[in-house]
Image (cartoon, rainbow, N blue to C red; front, side, top):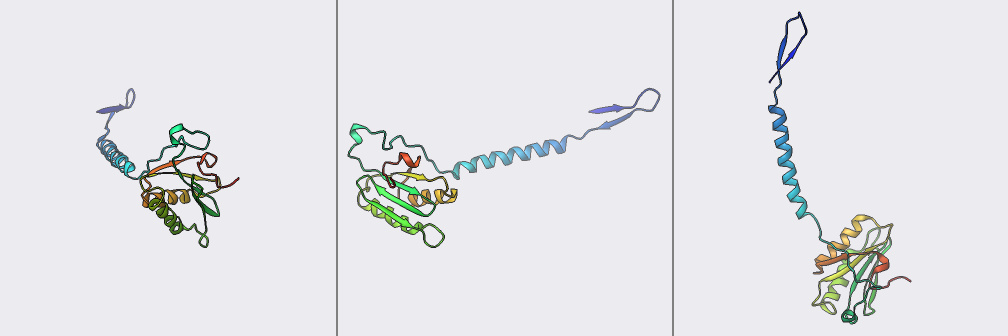
Length: 160
């Protein structure tokens, strides 16, 4: 591909534009984007909003026990719809994730042995990492079906 520069009586100059470096750059970027797109699928937690909050009840689900976790700035609340509510205070300046794990393991052994669903909610002033840590702790306790919902829609009422 040549480009002619010059006018009239002056000598014309032909310039060859080398497009090979541009093609190399585009092929490297394409390969990088394809590789990172596959990795993002492995680095995500599948959560879906749960439609079963306090307001939405079904006839066949009235006797079903639900587990809920509420993450606040100063504490964690864990409870079952059967009335078992537990408050886990902070351990120093961080949330007590081991305490949460112990409570969830206890629930898994007793009331929720055949279930894998849990509701997780967080108040507005909570750090995002605390929400992720709560979900990771729930997954570690074999609660694989996590529903992230609004705190007012939790099946368990922690604060009035």
